[in-house]
Length: 496
Image 1 (spheres, rainbow, N blue to C red):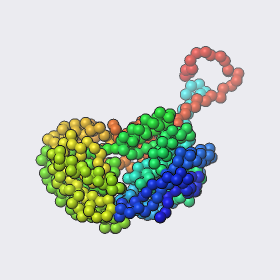
Image 2 (spheres, rainbow, N blue to C red):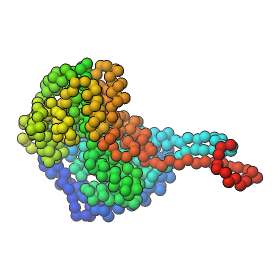
Image 3 (cartoon, helix red, strand yellow):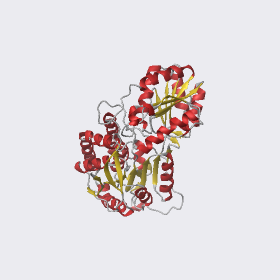
């Protein structure tokens, strides 16, 4: 059984703490790996390697840095199948979904390859007499990323691509549930010519996270995970004086107006709710059905659920795989019981699927109707293949429901009415909005992030906002006067 190690200063490093975790194949339920858990001193070793590499990486010319970034892009692209297979083996998502994850991650490397223009500052000649003013952006130093289990390849690319492009060095702490992709990526970055120490990986649990948050050599932390942990990461990192962006959970709503095409809306919500077994922070977990569209929409969704092919991610016929652990699967399934107890109607019960009773951590697609905001299945982020339907009588009730929710990651509306769509994108309190698109994840040259309890910190992740997050601005005011004109002037400097 292969042990998954750390990656420090350009090579794999076996753990010395004596602690480790177990990695399972979610499709079979079998243990397939052990992963080293770093001690605080091992985290220090990774940070020290990143700090040692930082001066040379920062002073490298932009043209040379971009040359390496292009080779990174080419190398990752050439090995995208290898990365995806590792994701499928340890996370469980089907291979086509894993390939899509890698593709969306590569968008961020594409964006980072344009770093010369992204770092270009402004220049004003003769802002005052013989005075020029210009702005520059400089890297922070050593930065760190803490990433979730549901996107073990894409989310690290969200972070490290912009971070290293800006001239920082990077320490990644991936999820201990599916850590293998991080090592594959690290090896590929080295193969592409990234200098040793610029990208490092420490495997582990809360011990590693705690040390990263408090480490005096870490300048900034980027985090993606559940809302309670995101809030804790934000508050802890800020306490230690670090720049921090912490993306939390979500309860994404899809509003369906009476004029919407029912079949199109049903196709969209099934795709968005059950892809990757619902383990996406942008998954649609609530349909808000307005007026008379509710019954035909629920019938159309129900009809589609029976044809979803559930199985191992390595099976090319599978459309939906298992959940990440047995404990998580059982917690997700418990919401079907509580929904019934609290007065909702379970239209499709995933516990009745044959895969639920077999090996692995499977749960069939589940659909709950007549959900109210007081029910557990609405209030909690379930993070599984369970879709709730809330019935409302009007657009105004729908927008009020969405805006009252404590999360504000994504929201979508399905309609043929352009006026209603424009009103929705103006009024909805969410960071990412889809109009007839159920999963409005921005492309790599925009930025990803929610509102309210879906984001802690001032900046969204990847895209243009990542450049600001991973750099500090500096404004230079310059004058080269004739010494003969020098004089003392105690007045406040002003333009002349």
